[in-house]
Amino acid sequence: MSNVFVYCEIEDGQVADVSQELLTKGRTLANELKCKLEAIAIGSKLDKVGDQIIPYGVDTLYIADDERLFPYQTLPHTSIVVNLFKEQKPQIALMGASSIGRDLGPRVSSALHSGLTADCTSLVIGDHYDKKQDKNYENLLYQIRPAFGGNIIATIINPDCRPQMATVREGVMKKEILDPKYKGKVVKLDVAKYVSDEDFVVEIIERHMEKSKVNVKGAPIVVAGGYGVGSKENFQLLYDLAEVLGGEVGASRAAVDSGLAGHERQIGQTGITVRPKLYIACGISGQIQHRAGMEDSAQIIAINTDPEAPINAIADYVITGDVAEVIPKMIKYYKKNTK
Amino acid sequence: MKAYNIIVLAKQVPDTRNVGKDAMKADGTINRAVLPAIFNPEDLNALEQALRIKDQFPESKINILTMGPGRAADIIREGLYRGVDGGILLTDRAFAGSDTLATSYAIGQALKKMGKIDMIIAGRQAIDGDTAQVGPQVAEKLGMLQITYVEEVLEVKDKTVTVKRRLENGVETAKCPMPLVMTVNGSAPDCRARNAKRIMKFKKARTVTELQKENEDYTALYNEHPDLMIQEWTVNDIETDASQLGLTGSPTKVKTVENVVLQAKDSKVISAADDEIEAMMVELIKSHTIG
Figure (cartoon, chains in turn purple, orange):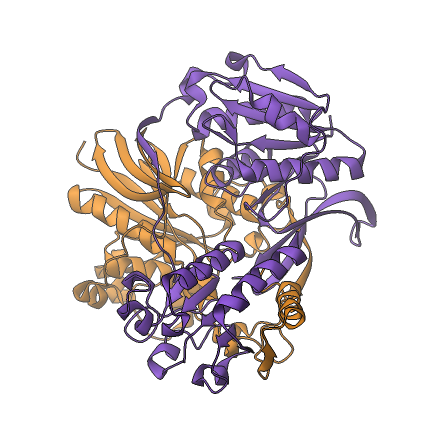
């Protein structure tokens, strides 16, 4: 009762990174609240998942194991989580802001009439004083997230409804095993008691995991390369930086024409127009046709060996240096200061 | 079955995608006045999927349900221009301050008044909140199946829909029974353009409130063309429990809001030295630009 709960996603017998990150965060929150950390794993052939989950400091792991429970389907997983939450009454429930968590979370919150905050970037325990009711709430979960297209940061609370639910994207929290020998209990649920046959109405005909399409236009951060990047190896650095920051890679026409990047990434008058929160222009001189496709970006970093490159005039940060030297440092200092 | 009753859920949103330098005031707050109100982009993808089903089964009916202030009637007009049969604007001060759950409750109660529905189609998420919650929450309120992240409706046959879903790491093809709630991904095909003849026909479509504000007398026109009347529902037109509406009915509360300052500064010129790059990354993390 009143514990912290984490829903664990499992693919091919492996617990998803995002779930491991949430278990780590969940342990911290449970310590602060002086309660237990609990987890639920739903799927098929889950004999070994306890060995992966318990070391994060999980006190009780509930397992619902049935061959019909993999791959994920909305209704059966919802029924199990909702029925288990009705029994166990957690105070906090965390899920990945993934295809699964963003499908399951709202369904569960709607069934339990509990508040859910999507895509939190930070979770903190804190108090709240409600002026209208003259009531003090202790130890609430502050669910902190960007809103309004990333232009504001909101702190959301659920004063009265339980569980306080939040989803978090992969890579936002760090993952850290608490103790490989942690003593936790595994409870195997009698699946038939939690889910009915009528919940299995969807027939999954085909399923394959593949790389998703390039989406430079919708990316909040764009790392774009020009002819000045020089080589395919250097261009790989742009992909590394984009991956770390959660962005996409774009390119100037010169880079596309010289074969450094595909057409689908071309930014500018004859390519796509982007307006990300942050545009990192690497080895791009900044011809007008390129600027037309990116000058409305909220912030611009220009990395160039040429201190007189036209792009510098519209940049917030001008870094005079070599892309191959600067990008690895940006990755290094981003990682150092975020996790 | 030759005809389906389809409801498209659509929302009018501020265009947060185009937040450029001019959209931020000097004090760092958002200048909402410069952000146009638009049809939520993924709801247009949803509308296109609905129109394609109607192309195949022309006897089908598509109605848009939108919740918002009076000006959200634009959403229904836009739908009419592109091929829907009609729409309902759900508008009332009682809905103000709703979080996703209170919104879903109000929308769910309105849907319960809309007769037998085969498919409810909505965009995956709205760009002003990016929560992707209302679709699944509505489905739960109605006790319907949901199928999220639809990229393509592959087949509609009898009482089943087969769809391709775009997941973060792959694709899935699923066959689902009706009735159901479908949410459509931005990677689905763009919505068709407005039809010129339909613009001529529906440009005078109005809600009662809009008619009262305009001085022109449309009485004769509306008597002749009742399909020009956009239905407007208030809280009194649906059955609701007041404790589940608006701010009161919202489990989540906004404790604080902090503006992210995005104003353009004079360029900072730095070198490739470690300390200078680290200082820049720290600034970007602190301003929530990254991280």
